[in-house]
Image (cartoon, rainbow, N blue to C red; front, side):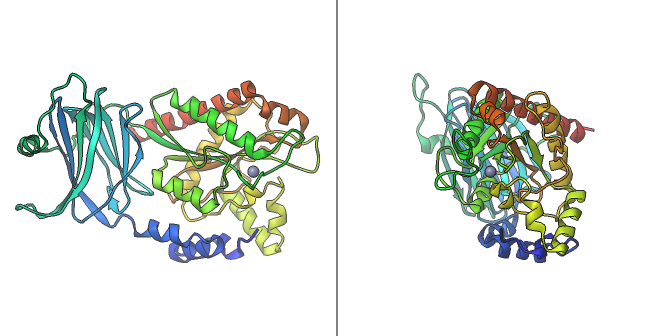
Length: 405
Ligand SMILES: [Zn+2]
């Protein structure tokens, strides 16, 4: 464990904190790119087209690129992130033509555009247009067409001209009926590849974590409310910095890391949830002063937890992570044994971004025969992950209620 005491000191400037974190965990690149984001502004979003071809235009005050986070191929919902664009406040609106609904909001990874497409539509192309022809700003264009097959296709050039004529500003009124937009959930199965994690009598932690992550993904994707991104989907080693980067790039709304515990005492069992709270951070800071913090921090013996980074800079994130952790604990109660010192306030924070709630769930002890049996059984694992899915539903339902007050 290599985190330094400085990481845990509160009341530092954000820059100093970020620098300390970067130095501690070699995340300089990720943090630098994060800091560089939100530099350009989104002016407005325009939409035009018909049932054959539609175009969405994002007007920007500077050049920008976009990444496709979730493909439209599966269910007609596409998510794009423009890393250097800021969309403070957010926009959303009704659709037109093949675009049924859209929204732009701000995430830690930049501005995020979500589009719901008509059932027979797909994204045909995306590109940046520089200022030209009397237009003094950049435009990021997303072209959508009806899938070939029975649908009359029109010449691209002709239809582009037609679309340009029909485009109209559409700065969204707030009460437009839009299709429900999805939350991006990043699931992080701990360990992998050459890093087996904890070792049980029947196998490795990494395999249990991955199986659970896939079960949770399946549970979440049964509802159309979520887009799910995994930090790994097979038995490969993914460095921590890359896991964080995956979440940042996806514009995660919530990050959940799945682990399985181990301990020297085979009778110890149960799940625990880690997040950050004032109490925990104070406690951690005290341990640092005592210079034996790492020993205390490794109570569970799970290096995955020790390798989690700390971010004490953002109260809002702490509160949101804590709110989710509490929901999670109440939902998994009864589905899995909970460790008596169920550690909703005793923990460690996945550093992600200032505004993304993040928790780490230790699903049980692979060093306890009952827990290991439970975690290695597909049906009980699915029950547990269903409960986790329920807690994610609860969390966003609460967040929505709060936001609409
Ligand atoms: Zn672990």
